Image (cartoon, rainbow, N blue to C red; front, side, top):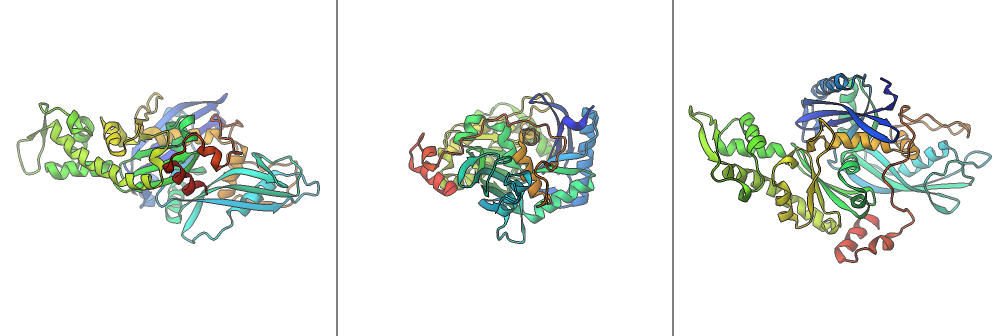
Length: 444
């Protein structure tokens, strides 16, 4: 098989490491292989033991290679939203060539100029999203290459994360014998698949319910505007069951998976469950309702803590409501619990592809989808963030090879919002005070 049309997404989670292999052909993405391995050296979505994490990554990749019948070398990796910072950026350069025709090299330089700012030494730029270019004062240009001008400007958004998180991720992947072609903030990748076009445009909240943490992210205008993390997830639910019922963690996890429910009112009071208790020969009998009360209490606590920052930002007034995903989102009646806490429209997302019909695979699918939809400007921006060199004397007819030479050239399948709209125009559909507060926090 020709590997030139394949993308590989690597999701390094707290409980499991997932590898998704997709083939891009004629603007269509097909999943051809999936690999999963229990995580090692990962805590709350962050790598804490590079060697152990590298070993688990190797095993997951090997499983995906066997299923897809390809050799995997390049991966698209998701970066946790822990301590994520989102900032606007702007840069300007003088066009270098004598002909004044803007080349790819000029685009790279203006991106570098936009990234020059006083970043703290402990932070690193993970992603750069160009919003628009200006050539000699003419605005709202998506791709300035080939145009004539003297002054080139760019405005965009940069996403930064702690260097420790990024470095440990890179190091573990390198030790696993792999090469990173794209680093993507996890909620940005999720938004590619869990939200429809209208939700991404007008705004929605994604709550990724993982094992080690729960992340709430606000997406509007097809861009990530806010991300907040609660450091509790499915593992805490398991721990609660273990402590309350005096059973070992493995038994507690099985109870959660097979009998768990997020609503005690929807659970059976007559259905009984046998629980092996530490220090007793005979199992104890509990009702499904009692088990669900334990689960419901922890999930309600997580949702309540996430509610405050979302309300402060006005995000709960966005028309897209909330979309739940991640492994814990498979818990029955979790949508009903979220509706009761947040008092907004709530739905869950589960991938529809064969072999991936479980919400914990959403990020892996999002990563390959994100990579397949990157246009030329997006690839150049990734090049610049990853440390691509800029040659001021580069001939204007010669374009630098992207980091991912196998990337099929294609335009994004999701229509992007009109960059000519200003803040007032975006406000027109809904003139509520909460929405205005939201715009002022993220667009002023």
